[in-house]
Every structure is written in C-alpha cells, then in structure tokens.
Length: 279
Image (cartoon, rainbow, N blue to C red; front, side, top):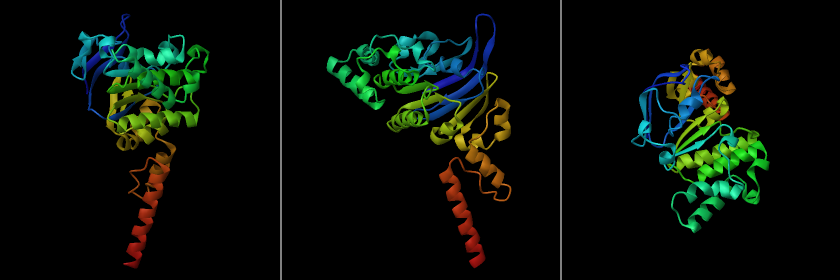
C-alpha cells in the first residue's frame, strides 16, 4: 500500500529532517509511528499525501508516485488528519465541513448527505451540524476534522495525534472508531506520544530517531527493547516495564502489553508450577 524507498528530505534552508528512510506498509496494517519531538514524524506523514515531496528517494502510495501527483489526486486514497485541526477546518458550519470532501467525489446529493450524517453521528457531533466549527472546543474541532475524513472513506488513514484535545475517555472512543475502520479493511498509520495507546491498538511500530528508522517491528517486540527506546526518550507502557522487572525471576514474561496479558501469564506460570509440584 505504501512503499518508502531511500527517502531523504530537507527544507529549502538545507536543514535535513529525514535520512535514508526505507519501509513498506502492506494493505490493512495498523501502524504506529513514534519518536521524540523534532525527529521527523509529521514530516514523514506529509509525504504520504504529497503535501511534501522527497528531496531524494521515492514514496509510492497505492502504486502512485507522490513526486508526480498532487494532494488532490491522492485524496481519494489517503485521508490525512492534522495534529492541529485548525489547519484543515475552513467551512462555516460543521455540516459543510464534513460534507466538503464527499461533495467533491461526484457522489449524489443523497449519498453526500448520508455520509455526512453518519460521520457526524460516529463522533458525537450530530447536534452541532449547524454550528461554526471555529466556535467549538479544540477537542470538538478535532472530531470535526476526523469526521471529515470518515465521510471520505479513504483506503488509507494517516492520523497525526488523533486524540489531541480529548480527555482519556474521548481518546479511547476515537481510537475504537479507528480500530473499527481497521477491521473494515482500512490501512491505518498514526502518530502519538501515548505509549499506552500504541500498546493497545498498533500491530506494528516504526520508531524514528533523528530522522532515521531506529526500530521497525511488531509492537510487542519494539516495547521489549527498552534500551533502544531510551535513545528517543520514550519508555514502554508501565505494565510492560513491570513485566520486564518480573522477568528476572520469570523469563517467560516477554509478551506483556496489558494488564490482561500480565494476568494471563501469571496464571499460566502458577499452573505450570502446580503441575510440576504435583507431577
């Protein structure tokens, strides 16, 4: 679905941001992109819909070379959620904001209306359709921006800090919607600083450090390389850190990312111990 080959990017002033980035993302993957501030995460995301073009190397999205395409051309394939919702909201009402994208896909008025109402309902904004989005809270504006993506139904969803401005429960609700989209076949790439969300939702993690890929592996494998993560000032979820402490005496505790994981592993270990004693 996405092929990044030897991607290097620098701004016009010569400041290098990305250096020799290589990875492929297959259709239907759920990928978290993590790293400390200033390491190039947002810059990398903007290459997926041609907001930025490689200084060298290439990015292909669904077989399209982004160097030869425009953001508008990729809009049918890639939905992009900015970290700051104010960077993408521009219509006078929530309803018009959500309907703008599908309205440009040459759909019928009935289909555009249905998509708009469905997306607004999904993010709990049905009662705000006639409101000016700029008068809403930042968390609500983020949901407006997210609804505008949902109404487009793109194959790929690129989400830069999708839970910005949300409290814990609202953030989980948004990520559960993203999870549902993944189950429906969408490819998901998201940036977050919340390692608990990464552990809970991502299947694969790409770690950036100083503009280069430091780690690229399954989520469980990445979080069990704490010494590597420390290079980016990131730490595994607390439950994984606890399991790693316990691992000194229980070497099988290498698969824990949640409280439920730890509970199941400890139950299994106690059962194994009982079987040995009784055997």
